[in-house]
Amino acid sequence: MSKKLIPLIFIAVFCFAALFSCKKTKVTTGDQTLNYFPVQLGKFITYNVDSTIYFFTPRRDSSIDTGGHWVYDTVQVCRQLETRTQLKYGISDTFRDKQNRLSYIMDVYFRPDNASIWTKSRVILLTPADIIQTTTAPPAGTPVTSLLYNQDGAQFIKMVYPIQQGLTWAGNANIDVKDPSLSFYKNWQYTYQDVNKSYNNGYVNYDNTVTVIEDNESVNYPQLDSAVFAYRIYAKEVYAFNVGMVYKEWTHWDYLPTNEKCITGFTVIMRAIDHN
Image (cartoon, rainbow, N blue to C red; front, side, top):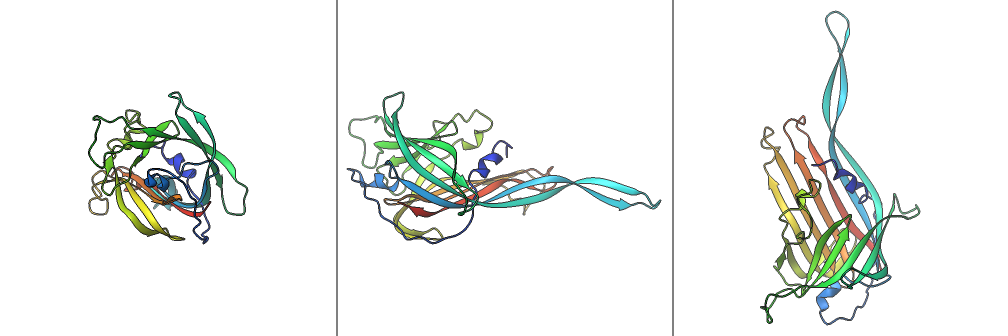
């Protein structure tokens, strides 16, 4: 895994489990499936995020040789860092993009625990956008709108509408995967699963949700063959009706046999604990 990716994790780590009741927010729209990701001023969701970072570092081991002298040997040690913090996503303002489309500013706030003050850490831009059809009468189930999600200079096609079970789209089609730091986003195929199903994120049970599997790929398993390269990418998000994203799981690690049999990468899990 590129070292450029590891800092991404520190903005998505947080602590303390708490239980909040599920609140309702009404949005009136022609396509009711748009309400799985409500885009409206004042909307916010607070998350607990648990993150694990996998890496290796040098360590100097010492021993005494037969002549009574200390001998030092530098070795690589596999390490695992677990962190917990909180994040809050809130839609604060609107603007018109270069195509004159109404877009929304979503501020992201960070704090190390629920007793600390929120600090603004980044801005995400949301743009509901039409999808140009190839025919005047597309087949049933063909997406007609989408939600563009701009974060850290990368534009994701986060959702397509209307939502239907099994619908698949290239969610990272607008990302420059030729950039080495973004190359792992190549060929992701987003898929809707478990539409209208209930989901418990560990804190709250939501009656009506949809799951988006963004990517699920792996090559080899270090536990089975430690002599070959291996990697794992898994990205999943769950959205609750009239709430938004209530669960996110993202794993990305690489394994090189030369790295003292250590994997390098991360796993992040975000769970919604409060919303309006």
